[in-house]
Image 1: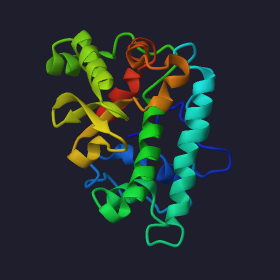
Image 2 (image 1 turned 90 degrees about the vertical axis):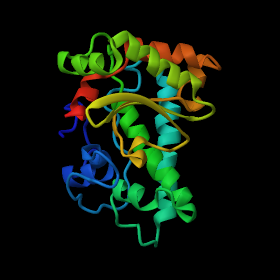
Image 3 (image 1 turned 180 degrees about the horizontal axis):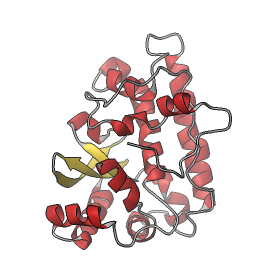
Image 4 (image 1 turned 120 degrees about the horizontal axis):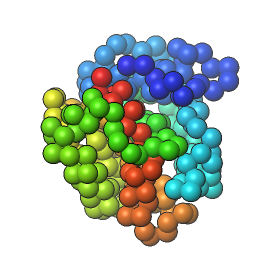
Length: 238
């Protein structure tokens, strides 16, 4: 799978290094089945956003992006690099770190930070300015086969996002030939259940609280209607 054309690497970072530290896992159908080996890369880098800080306003403000990306996402990167220093995982790319630590109680802190880096990178690409609307024809056909209609999918996705208790994520995933909506808590991600993520909605409070306070449903519905990146979902579907 190719990276979205608008997803650019930070200045001075090689394409091989960038792929190994950001979205290499998007080529996998599950954490246990990467499509191809990825070169080791250390330290883990903070990927560039695929759009400008203010590009999602007014649905998501530049102020929220500044804190969410500049503080929270960056914080996970900084924490992970600190946790990895001197360990046997230090030279692994991000997706290999997630694989190696998933479900291991003594590696929980590493998994949480690594998975959150991956989740956030995936979330940014699940959004785009002037998004929403009608999915591409190929994706729409798959949605209708699995949910009956695009509106039914949107309703199910919104329900998953608003009903997730506490922090977590709502996902559109592929389970074989069928599309499903699931939700995960905290840092968990669909690959640990053998599912292929297509797009996600972040429902940690830091994703929306500066703009919406406790009105999570308003954030979720506005995101689905105006920002969701159906083209990214189709690309991940393959």
